[in-house]
Length: 309
Image (cartoon, rainbow, N blue to C red):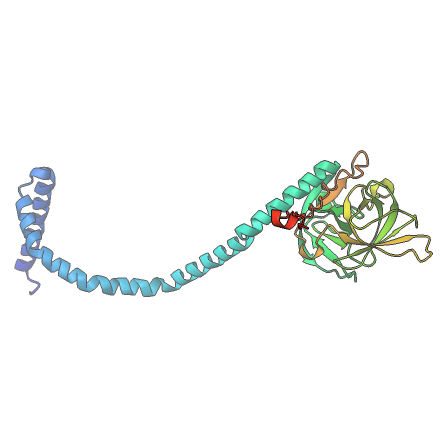
């Protein structure tokens, strides 16, 4: 169509008619006189529009997917990392249950012995200081931890604090050969000194070479001057063997520690000692030996009858 005066007048006329129809349609609302025409047009052109949309929409969606694929991939990757980190932080349900049970045991031990404790988690094994048996805990001077504090868990004596930083501390375990703690025998109160021999055994030297000791007897910590590095009454272990005297002035015992040093997780640091020595009260009730079953044989009448002469 050529750009002439007549064509321009026609375009202006068409625009004016369009505006007039729009005005009539808006003012008429639902009763608009153009409603029938609009429905007829929708019926006529609707199938064509849907057909065009079916062809065009997949292409548009594909283009959008390609354009957004990088962002989606990054977002999915970020969510996967966050999910993995959250799972690692929360831990498995079994581990959470075990830690809750261990914490409950520690609190009961502290309540029985009247120890004020600070809970901590074992976060590393070993030390740069050359100790053979050490662990690092996630509590330090900012938490009130100081050198030469007693460390325990729900089973008994774990060790003592050796070095402290603002947010972590090193614990020398009772299993270390350089570890020494004063001990007291349950009931008899015989005093001795225990040294570490690895995770399974402690060596105890009783000062009284004639002390009456037997397998199964138990020991607790004797306590130190001003309660450092050891508070009294913390369970140490059970006697597994009493060495022969051989003329020695002291008596040597082999003791199995109550604590499993190879599976430490949650511990408690004694930040305030008890007002008085708890003695044997922190020890768990002794395990009673199972009675040996007896077999009774009942003779039958034929077996018990005397032979006739």
